[in-house]
Image (cartoon, rainbow, N blue to C red; front, side, top):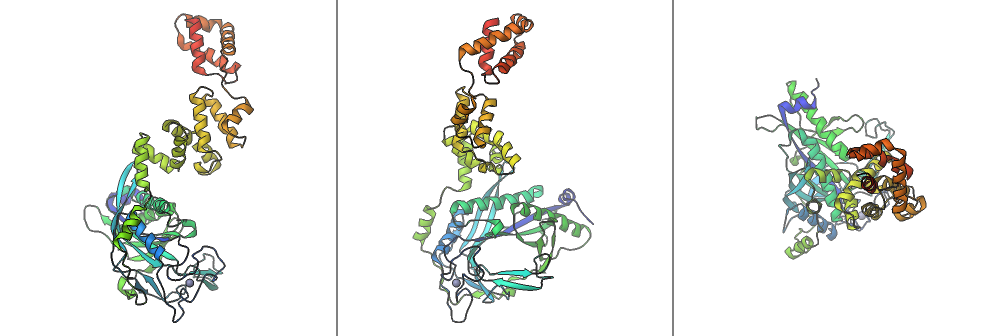
Length: 494
Ligand SMILES: [Zn+2]
């Protein structure tokens, strides 16, 4: 049986949580000196430590610990003054030691939050923990249709990624978002990505796997107050997929529960092509991993002064920047969110810095330029026009040199690579006719050619002036300032 999303939400309240893995952008790996790079020749960035060869010993990368603390502080977490790495034991071909050095009951950062802007309001997502661990290598299954191990002829393994520092950020369960749950989940990952980027700790490229999400979803019968069994959808690799994965799990679990079944605690795989999840393996419990403190590494005990130093080095965080700009530009939450969702906050900020009013900057980037970007299928910020050029166009309009129609032509010229706005105005002869003599002559001609209209205006029907303005605009090929033309007409006829 199938249940629509709307039906599911009538009977059930979704609860979701996210586990996000972020590869840190350190120069070297977490426990050895191998370069931490993406896309190198397979098995060319390895050494005895990250290959887990007998007798090799790990040593922790100070920069990776610094970055983890930085992330924890930006997420308002407490930072442990003393904690240890732990061994997580399981067998997997891409993990050369057959255990992963991670953190278990002593994470470096705990109990924080991230404020997320969605639908014009702020939702606070609790952060359970932020811990540091090593990444695994990568298996490549060859010969199958899906790239998964099933149906493959053989598998290859590349250990370049083994030992790259990985930070895991785990949210607390997020209840109470109802219908908007998939959107909040997506907004959380977007906000987290922006935050990590602003911290400069990772390149946060989902398509290259440096930011990966697992999404936990469960349903609770409305009004029962009892949370259901959760499933974990693994490696959801785009922002859009985060939203789709939550939605698809809500629909699937509702159908299971409505049919009298029970949701099984398991991992599931999200399929980009169909937008649904399929069953993976039943979920291990923590005790299955036989965690124990890592005996080859000393405890991590960041001195309080160092933590304060890192805190002082934090840049302005995206949520603070948003609040500042929203206030400076006098925008509502929804208006700001529209800019945010269009990816236009940065360009608008630069346009304002280049001298445009916030209203003008917003008008051009969200209007004409957003339309062009949409037609071209690119982000507005990658259009071949600079914020400075947009500010100049706005200034030319404000000074009366251009009207809106001419300004759009100037933007055409700039986007076509014809030069700066001033160069385009000169080359295309686009400036408004400001020669009062020429304008007066055109007005007189229009009056002479439309005596009936002129008579009606003399009788007080000033709304008829539109016909004469149109005639003047036609005569000047759109290069007249309409307000000035109207003033001239009324001066003559009233
Ligand atoms: Zn190594």
